[in-house]
Amino acid sequence: MRGRLRKAEQFHEAAETIREFAGDEHEVSDAYVTLCVHAAVAAADVICCIALGEHAVGENHDEALGLLEKTRPGGKELAKSLGTLLAMKTRAGYSHRPASAQDAKRAQRHVERLVTVARDRASA
Image (cartoon, rainbow, N blue to C red; front, side, top):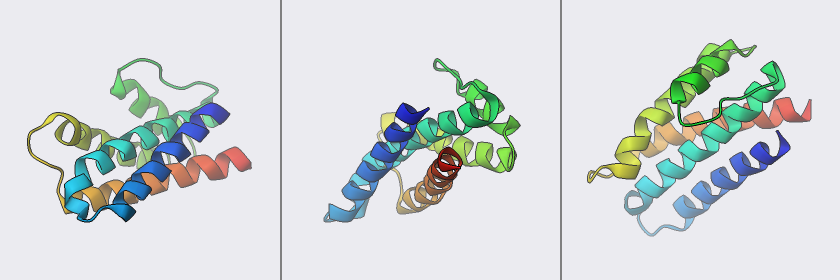
């Protein structure tokens, strides 16, 4: 759990650093969103470990969403945040079209929710 929390914080910090130092945020929006997705997945693992004693392993994102939804309090909202980020993953990481400024703002809002909850629950 601690290792996954470190990864969540590391990806989140890297995303914010890239965004902060970019000359044009739009030029780094794909990298920013992709790092937010990685941070969110790691944060979701932490939340699930604390609440359920397990986290999803493998590439099945539906399993991760299902487990996260079972966590209390706020599992459904947390799963919605992760789902939103996972939906952006393909466009940001694999599409020829860049993530938009709006995508980056949504990614920031959702990743901050997940990383904050993971950090708070891990320190409780």
